[in-house]
Each structure stands twice: as C-alpha cells, then as structure tokens.
Length: 122
View 1 (cartoon, rainbow, N blue to C red):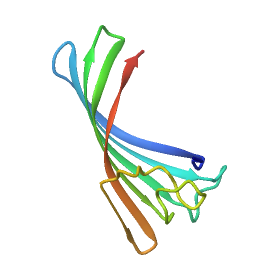
View 2 (cartoon, rainbow, N blue to C red):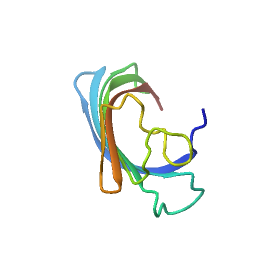
View 3 (tube, rainbow, N blue to C red):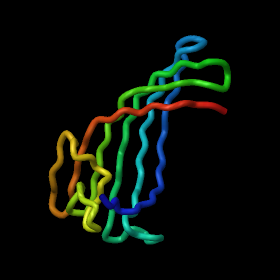
View 4 (tube, helix red, strand yellow):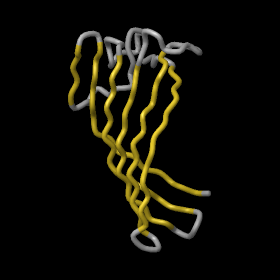
C-alpha cells in the first residue's frame, strides 16, 4: 500500500462553552486546502479541499489537562478523479467507507462521518 504524499494549509473557527468546572463542549469548522504529490506547487490543476465540522465534549482535570471526544462530519471536493487510490492519480484521503460520493463535471466529492478525540495539555 503506497499512499500519495500530501501537505496542506487549513483555517477555521470554533466556539467553546464551559458548562461546569470540569465539563465543556466545543464546535469547530475547519477547511483544509491540500496539495497531493506536489512539493511546493500552488495546486493548479490539483485542487483538493476538505471541510470538517467537529462537535466535541470534554472533561477538564485541573487547569492544564483535559480529555475530549466527539463526532466529526467530513466533506471532500477535488478535481482528482479517483479519491480512493494511491496510484498517483487520486488520493487515499477519502476512506473507502465514505457515506456518499459522486461527481459534478470534472469535480468529485465525498462525505463521511468520523470521530475526533484527544488529550489537551498546556
């Protein structure tokens, strides 16, 4: 299995709400622009965008440590014609279990659910 190398730049915004001293929720919208098999190109002819909406619940243990977990909803749009390959013509960024996919003109799209989680410390 050979995955295509990629790099990206992302931006987003979010909302954090503390419900008690230990429990909080976060909502995040993140958009990432990805370059696949391109060292430092501007992506001309190889546009891939991934949009993510993340809903997270967390537990704080003190001021500098927390655990969080929640669902994510992912949407990918690309002018690469094969989203599930690692053959240099597509990308393995869209999982094979994607919920829906299709194409409009020369653009392909896919969306799928996911899980986000982690440890926060600072």
